[in-house]
Length: 119
Image 1 (cartoon, rainbow, N blue to C red):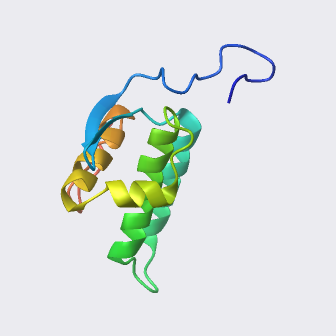
Image 2 (tube, one colour):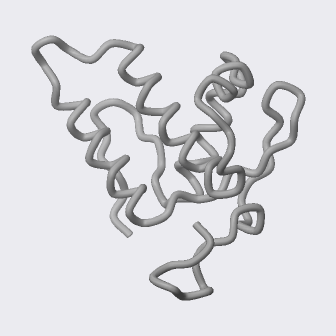
């Protein structure tokens, strides 16, 4: 996005600070989710947690997390594709990447049955 409603103060890809993480041997900066994306992620996570018939699968959670990581990366690397991200992620850096995205966006992982702390 080069401008926002004709304004020059729109986010500038490649300039959004975040957490540097090594994905597949490449250092990339995971930016915090914008407010719209954060709300969408929270809604999807709540909907997934409430799903009972059928219950959510590990693949459902993987897709949710992958979407958040991809949106975070798109803020600095708008050209990165889903297939490229799949190739960069592994079982170890996936955990680190989603934790970085959630922590920066003000969301914290909680154990099952715990509630999110109120700020």
